[in-house]
Image (cartoon, rainbow, N blue to C red; front, top):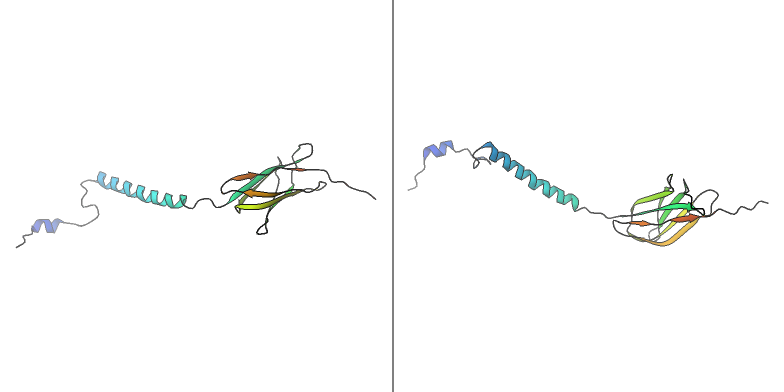
Length: 143
């Protein structure tokens, strides 16, 4: 026959902390749980990864001076997707979120200048490919 202690049965209160003796143990348990869930959440965020590439460069004239406000286009030749931007005050341009691979065709235009172009440019996952272009003055014929 099984004998049960009636005082133990009446005093037993089941909860998650019943094995802990003081509040320091409960605090440590909460910290450990927070760390475990934090690490799991962080690993999920890091797992997203990078899925695009970047393209940047400088547009200059024949004298090596930066061209401010030049229109720059990057065309992903395979898909026909065209990305566009304008150079900043130092003649720099920057494309983010491009499809990885290529080939790309990069062209720049500016009033009074000949169009400048480079083809067969490839981008790589998470890296920035650099394409610098030089623009020459346009020949204007007056009649």
